[in-house]
Image 1 (cartoon, rainbow, N blue to C red):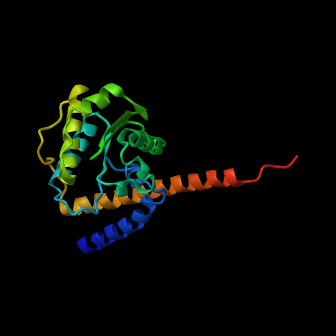
Image 2 (cartoon, one colour):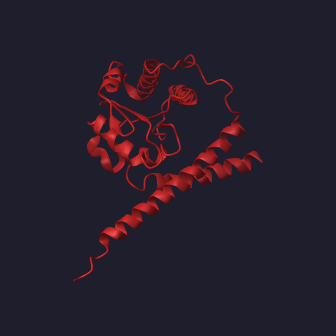
Length: 212
């Protein structure tokens, strides 16, 4: 049974992966169903990723709705790599891409700086707050910085998060795989709907106007 579940998870991931890059911005599709975007092709230690996931999950559970994009290189931006040195404009762009499904808080961290918006709008005071968090070097450093920024934002909003430890009551291996399958299926469905919408918009733009 476990082997069957693993195979299904791998198949779901294989289907979702190309869809996630269909519009050239990986994070904009991944964050439709997930709370944290991180380039999973990286070979860096995942301790920091587990902690960030736990912190963000705890924040959302307590009512502090937020999603986070950890951008490590221009490649992570897909076809919008021109925004690599512009984390705040990229954050705004990403929020608009997500807006049909998610309009809450959005945090972006990269070696080039921070980005932050709420309901697709920049919030200068909150951006200044996260900019007080030093951005550490390396991909694991970015994860630790993002974790600290989420905690600072939550505290500023009056939310007290759990101590910085691994999430309690974490799922077993089989539960985690089942969750991954559900998440992958959801991502595929939502991404497919969005791609269909965009295709229809393109056809409407390309349709010749009636002659007089």
